[in-house]
Image (cartoon, rainbow, N blue to C red; front, side, top):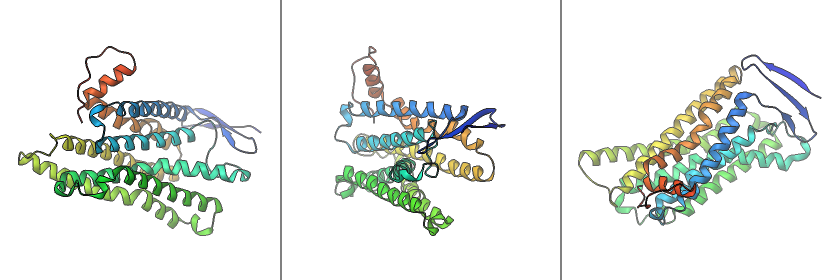
Length: 306
């Protein structure tokens, strides 16, 4: 059965039909634009990971581990968002009862995609705090010495929490439908890591400013300073998107969804490319590797600026 609904605010039509497994819907213009942006972002982040793997000066550094995890988090986020904007309804409630495992998998993937970047930045902010504010204990810190393992624990933790959320949402006990459960979920997956990261990076910024005023230099020819500034900039953008997204969610519950469609198309989708653009713009060796991958003539690749 096909029904047609005109959206007066977008002047686009949408329609739904039921296959018995998934409810399909054709998206409007804004949703289609968001899908295109997310697919482009997915490809750009994959290219970013390929270039990072080829930068010789980053090999063996903690900074490389941070950059890779930020890009992986963006990739998972973009994949989940692009999937949600495809021409079928992927919300757990729209999927039919016989596909419980599929519904749980979708919920886990989208929940991880929405929140893993916050825990990636939490680990990165701890590492940068130790490097800038606690340099004498930096090398002896187990977090620094086992940084890849710490990132792996962060990914595992978010995956486990997301799985618990998905299972509880599907079983639908009464208490999971209350607003208290939603608040607890947001606190664990978003607010807590973001508050800790913001606190640590504010201290890092203060220390960098103090060092600048005193003409002090960070060890390793200032590379730690540049890495810290990069993390601060990208995290600040992430928090701007997070806070504006909260506003968008509130608006969508009190009015139409048009505001969120515009938000997803204009801001939320493109922001996942930002860290790639910022790092590529700041690093000459990165630009040279991109030219080399696409077959353009380039000068001899020098040491990367981090």
